[in-house]
Length: 209
Length: 177
Image (cartoon, rainbow over all chains, first blue to last red):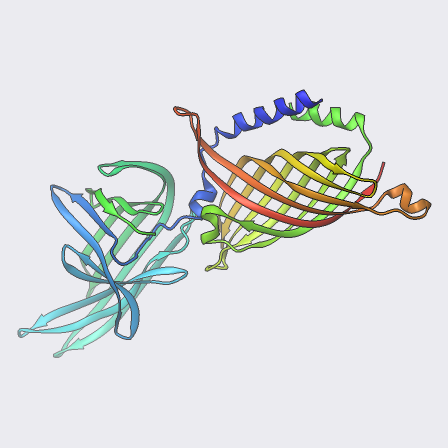
């Protein structure tokens, strides 16, 4: 009986090793490690994009994360359930900039789970110097696949692929239109994106957990 | 292989029913996002062998809309390394088959994974009248480490990722056959 029992254990261990769905690994991983000092370097159609988490700060009374993307400021807010990004959009009239959009738009719902989808639409009507601006800003994402991704920085396993759509309309005219895919790796963050058929690949990174 | 083994155990020994309850503590990577929770399990004991079922619901620490349901079927061998008339200390080793369902609102991920269980147990038997002698009740305390194996690198023959759960439980057992 003991022989058969140990044979059974060996058999189960052998079979177990075929399992490649690391649900628990994904569930325990941070796909957005936005800690101060973390940086990522991307190859973006022949150019280099540098992204760095500069510091935690307060903007418009909101605690957020100051991020530099090619030395341009971005502000992100990561809470328990979601990640939002600050958008400030201006129009220039008579040499003066007027804000027509200022909001923390939802980017990601956390945690990432296959099949999850979300969207947020910001709409507003602003009167500037007698001109009316109707703005509509939409961000949609859907977690569509779990896969391995091979990029310049290496091979990343258990990545989530997100389908992405972002549109900005001012007075019903489409002024910005982005569609594509993003791949996020556990404990690393964004490793690849293809937006409007233009590919961005992770080249190097430094991430503290 | 599983079913002949179980059948073999069935024909040999007396049968005990065991019910246990206690904390299931996610460890390693999982500890970051998931809370300790209660696990309930029931088992059939055939002398030193045990066929057990366990369940726990692990809530996400930060987002209560997300949780993992854990179901387990385990075959465990308990070796009584200290055995006295009324109590014994047991070393346990076994294999289990786990089903994990991760759910957030209406979406879910699920997976099956084999694992290894090892641990220690203490069993205190009660004695008394005819009825007590017939059902042979016992108090149980067990500590298990459950290693869920998720993948192996075939090139190097190494386990690539495992997640660990520490299970503590108190329970009772009765002889039913």
